[in-house]
Image (cartoon, rainbow, N blue to C red):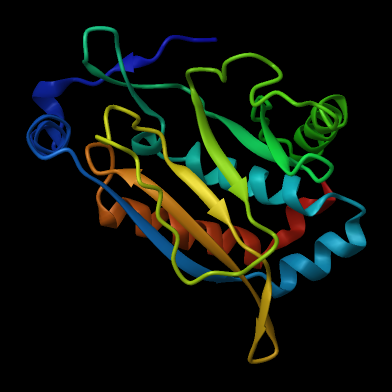
Length: 218
C-alpha cells in the first residue's frame, strides 16, 4: 500500500475550509438522492453479475476520481490524499440477523473486481465477526446496503464527528416510479474533506455511470 501524499497547504484553496470544519466547527453532513437505475437493473440481470458488487464497484470508480474523497490525516494531523481508496462493504447473515464488513481492493477492471469480491463474500458468508478479515485498510471507505426498505433520508449520527474523512455510502431498496426504477443512495461526508459542490458532483457522476452500464460486460 502506497503512503498518502501530503497536501501542500500553501497552495490549497480549501485550507481555511478544512481547518474550520475540522478544528473549529466539526461538521459532517448527509445527502440522500434517488438515482434512476432502470437501464442498470436491466443490464445487470442479463449479465450474470451480482447487483450489490456492481453497485459497490460503481461507487468505488467515482470515489477514486476525486482526491477529496480519498483524504486522510497523518499521525501528525496533516491532511493527505491516498493514491487509491478501497471499498469496505457489509454482507448480511440472515441466520443470525447480523452483518460483517469485508474489504476488497478496488480494481478499475470491473470483471476482476467482481470475481474478487464474490470470492471474499463466499469466504465469509458464515462469519459471526464484524471484521472477519481484521481491521479495514486505512485507505478504505464504507458501503452498506439496506435492501429491505427504500428511504427518502438516511443520516449517521457520528458522535463528535472526529477525523473520519472518508465518505460513507448507504444504499436502499429499489422502488418504482413513473415506469422507472430508482435506487435511494445516501452519502455521509466530513465537511473538512468536501463541500456540497463536491458531493453533488460525485452523485451526478454516479448517475451517469449507472445510466450507461456498458461496463457490466467487462
